[in-house]
Image (cartoon, rainbow, N blue to C red; front, side, top):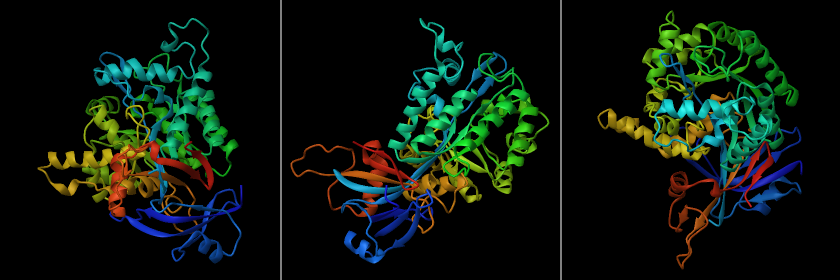
Length: 501
């Protein structure tokens, strides 16, 4: 792979929530340090030959077609767990023409739940969670998982985990997700395997071993034995991630209490202390479901709110990602802002599981930093582009229930901003990801749009371009109709990590 590469074409980004910036030029990307950073951007370049001439080097040029654009990669995250104390049942919520695009981040995704994507049936949330989620997650590390009850041969949980994790990383990369904040399972070996696979595949990833050890809220076949075991296995997972990437820039650990009710109070306190001592990221869930909030009040009577529980245990930090946050009070939002904690909005999951409509506009007005998550498998898709359109649709529902007030509406540019710049802020990579500025990492996706055939033949994707659309129109058509077929290539840190055949 050459040390330097020039990318020429149209660049589209969302540096501000209401700004869709469309420019043509060239980027010189330097992989000398292994990071793949933008060494120079030149908006006066008019052709690939002009780019080489202006940069004064003999280097490969990746060129977008006339209908193409580069757009930052997506950044994302996902999963939940609840418990019915009365029934003692677990409630685990959770163009033929080429175009080049930017980084996407999934700020909340459960890698271990990927096989259950789209499995809802007619079950209630409780039935769905207890029937599918905990058994599936446990099967990636426990040979005595309920998933193996009828097995005719001795189970191999790690072989299953390898299949699942390879597939989910392939799928997220194919959807343009360059950065993902992953929940694994409670199993150390399987969590380390997820880290191995993500690092080898080149996806920027934060890997979290799930912490859950409270006997009254976690099934016997799927929980840590004690606070001591939780902390020991968490530390071992952290060290494994660091052994793979000492810089922590491509792969890093993230402390992951599933959610407050799944952990003993002492466990939450020790996880908070560990995060503080090691300056680590934290990810968990908050205020996703009204029953969950009631449960938190029962289990933590000395704290006034769900947010206060995390704050009390020193888990509300500038490096913490709180998923969902559907039912926060204004006081809670203000405390989250004060602590500089981040929010992962998971609109598809919130709708699919009937959790409610998250008022993102209110959060943004309060000054909270918000990104997007797929929350697989509470969410039905690994696509952050799908999360963008769901965020837009849910915002309209929020407006409807507030008297039809359109101020709550999110536009396409805002949705894309949440998926890129917003996501970068949520995972602590602001200024490094999400745009096309010198010094930023080259985490980029290349998109494919279809030009309409004069004879009316069906195109390869659902994004039909007739030729008279403005570029703003084309981006909107991509957001509302696009999918993984539109993603031709993906780079992370200048390394090609996905190419559609």
